[in-house]
Image (cartoon, rainbow, N blue to C red):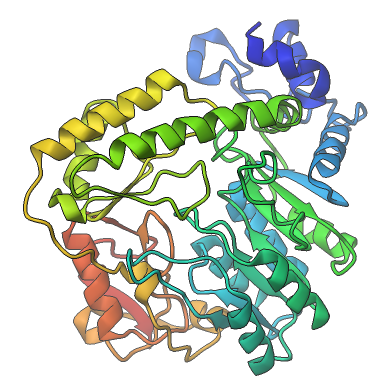
Length: 469
């Protein structure tokens, strides 16, 4: 047993159930069909279901309920649910938990595509919060109370306010002030905190959304904590949210065959955060501070110190190096960054990293940038942050509208039926129901030419777009 498992097993009922079931062997006559038979190779070796694996088919042991209870206690929530569908599932559950079809909600334009599609599922209509961009970097800032106050005045019928905090690049907003404003209006504040599972557990880091007064947060345990891919949590207080409606909304888009390994890893990550989070996160803060200092000595390289303390956000424009080329060479060297576009690089450092791994990142990055250095250039503004949406139809109405396919330039002026986003960060440039503008098409085409993947579009080459007939 590894030190990781032994440290948390006694405090993590799902992890204990998972390891016990793995050790037991036996002859399962339940799904999954591979039954972990070694003949099918290593890929199925650790795949246990919740039903008939970690627990009986009738869930008589209650290990999931107990694990979720412990998570609720750690985050100070009334309700905690473990998702095996990532923050995508959590965001869509929250969209389904508020309002009725046709109701309006206040949402940031920097929302992840999953929340936008949650509006489609729920039939909600967006009132866009403006995107604040740092003029020095072209990157998005966190939510601002003044913007939320203005939207509440303009849309007093809005039934809820959604915000993203922290942003993809680690910016944090004025959550406590925003929560006060939203609650004064009698509305719930719901937070996409996919990148903030570690917040609130070390004094160098911002408080997490519930500590700041939010009514619910969604966070990915697989991003900044050591859980399996797709592991996420929905955490909520129920003063302004109906717990029965939230439960129904969660199950509406949940799988009835959750992977036990994902659930167990979520429970283990929660237990580790509870037992050793402060010490482990302190080491991450220290490693990132050291990396920032060393990278800041590279001529022309910009290293942001205005984001939360575990985030490395590195600007390349001043070096003349192309971030997509740098990212490709890092990958070839076995050091892959979470995000690389022409001007910015975002490698993710977590509690799983060590001084050795961060040293490898820094050393390799410095060498690659030196090989590709050239004349400095101005930082380009990504279309993900600069789009100015014009809503023509409700997202759900456009999503189900009869569509035609046109050449991209010919689609300008028409109404999009599809969601189109550079990925990462997965922030929509075009959304269902919005007018296709020259600005959006030009920005997307430029991103595609630079090598950025264009996600979710029916035609990922962007030669064509689907619009309302």
